[in-house]
Length: 320
Image (cartoon, rainbow, N blue to C red; front, side):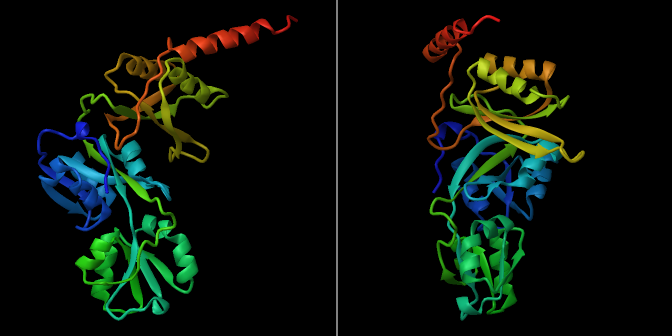
């Protein structure tokens, strides 16, 4: 199941759209959930990096890659490609429910499985299941959950199983040994559509940037965050990432409510870029699902009440 507002979908069918393949991956399902993407030519790639490279080289117009999962968190390779290795920007989000099964060749039995194959994130999402039911088995990484199913099918080995989507198991005529094996009942992955443009405002947008502090001094990060707070901009995500230039050196990925075309957003980024940090812009785009987007202007009631409250407290400070 996906949950995406129609307002973020394009009125035009894009050309080729790349995705983390092969067919049958959750990434493929996410792409098919979008009418405009489903109507285009969907092109599978073996890795997340290859999807980004295809977008950068104009081999495809758009790409679909996983960004984060409710159980395992951010997909590091996607973040690194966005931050360091690609000029592609986020066009939209797609939230997709994830259900994983354990599948083997016909005649396989759970007790006899010695090797479990899947994408590293899928293996991590089923860590408890593996520990409780397959502690004797070894795990091996694959490029995707669908490719894991394909590897098991072509192995003809009854001791090898894949963690994969149910549809991928069925597509490869595998026997489902157990279903719904993810560690949490609620398991969603957020995918992003990447491209080279900046989306027009939808009225329900957020912006993503990466900040590279010019000087690591006390209060420098607070100074950046204060720029958002003073303008009433809702910062929805703050995540540090290594800059890859030395231990202890980090950049900061930030998501916040609003579109780059809005004056308060533009003013905030301008101020930060001039005084605090270099910025890589990752996109302004429509949010997925029914997420409520609210901005808090500095002249709102709560700001005025807080100003009165703070002024009252300061008036009570004893003079030295």
